[in-house]
Image 1 (cartoon, rainbow, N blue to C red):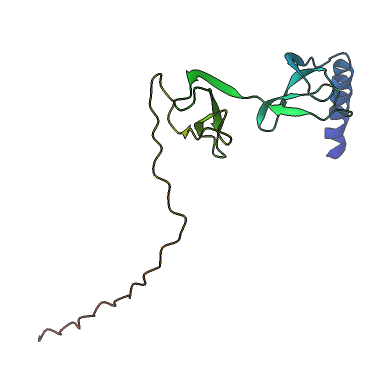
Image 2: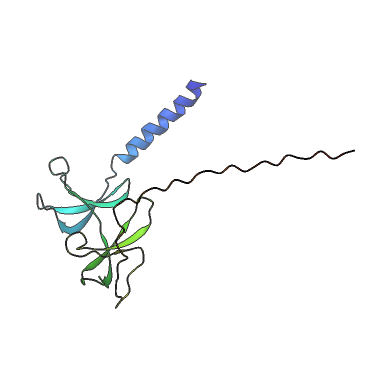
Length: 147
């Protein structure tokens, strides 16, 4: 049974290997230079999608994510608004200056001329737990009907 399968399978594998020898994967070159070595970065595909990487991989291991931006300015500081994804692939919008000088972050896409008012900060002090006593329901005894 194994010989019947392996004979034709081995011939097919050898045929495909000969055909693929002349095929080269062309990488799409970007216009962004690598900060470490100066070469033009290329687009590559990985487990989580497209990203920028340096073409001189073993020597230079520089890689960067591709950042999506929208054409609407930040409602708070006027900077660029980026589209990012959560672990569950849900989009959210954040200012490029977010941790440094701006605090804009939203689930909703900003509109032109929108005024952003953040919700009140949630207190970080934990509240005292109140314990509730469980009350058991009183079981009613079924009265037997006289027959």
